[in-house]
Length: 100
Length: 467
Image 1: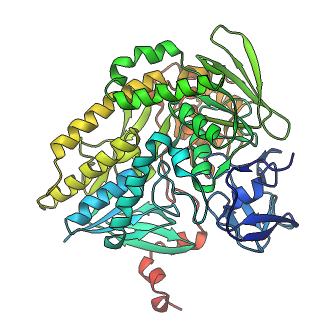
Image 2: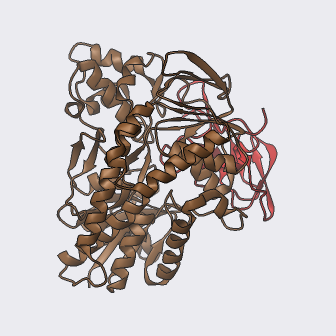
Image 3: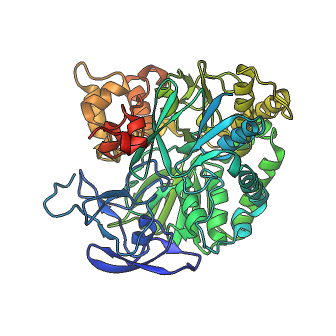
């Protein structure tokens, strides 16, 4: 499948380009990382302690099940972090980092 | 004049701030959200053409009233958005915003921290596409986004019907509404529910409207599993006669009422008391939210009661702060507020029966079902630990042995189920197995922030930091 999250309201405002695992994805100004990734993908991230993939859960900053790596080795909580143009998001961990 | 810190900018926190500011008190409001409103009055992000009237329906006036009140208050308080209060000392809150540490000194602290969804693990609940019921609503309110195209709303909560109505209005297909509480329980709770007749009527109105749109609604179901390969594709359940059904979907919103965010209250030294109606541990407070010392609680973070009760208890907590500081309050009548809160509490008791927490279903959980989604700990691992010789009889011990509740969410989403499972295995009352204790930081923060904790003044003013 393509995206999981559906934009029910047509976004106004300028599009921003982000990278998800190196692939270009179009998002919109003000969107959260979670919305931007899940509008294009099935899941957000590889779970650290199992083979499962996860797509967040509580969507309000409580469950912490949407933390993703950025290519610059920062980690962000996807549901409360706003996308920025050029942001490079990884659904796994950066090369050379252990899975957790 | 006293300094008051308020954590939370939802209906309780802002109502408290408005009363205090009107009396000339210096108020600092700390809130994690981008905008005020909490979860219930979550504002659409800037520039999004979301039709608020369609989304909020009959509730739109209370949404507008809240935001108008905040706009009037904005310049009279120190409002700090996107800021996490992660620890609390005697007269100081430790905060972090965008990775930078800070601290807020206070004479009195009002905790209006709100609540999250209360969930019971179900097979497949970690699949992509399964979200909390409250989360599904928040995504719609803030981003105008749906969690999928065809959604099943399940669990037990009055919000099932409201959320389904909102999703339907925004273009989603509603696969079904699956309520685990039998309809008879709702009729049985009618006496208490009549304490808030308008809210009750609205609830039945939603139900009727959904039936009119031919949305399948089942009461008294048993949820068996959320199933799918790389994400949720169907919900398997038994209806009240025991017949099995499967409904296709690409999104599931589920929840069983709410769970107060009590972590900061606990860190502030507030006693938590077991509440038999909610089967949860709540901050011990008097009718006005006094917890002793200089700490006060209000809103759903004190006792789940909904937005109206939250605003009233926020005003009550503010009155208590004023009274304890020897400041005469004007234009608020605490006795009238208490009467209104008491009526809403009766309504809430009714709701807790009409939409019951399915405590008993924990015994039917398959051993391989994940209980702690952070650490990936299954029910069978908990049972094995409890069964072992000298096994844990208390949940913090269970956490130490199994890691259940030790992950990033600190047991917010597994703690209640782990306690129910422990009590059921040992055949003891729930309150005897305790509750997972809160630890600072209450949510993940950068390591550099916690290292700066003992020097918050230096963190505020980098020029004074030692080289």
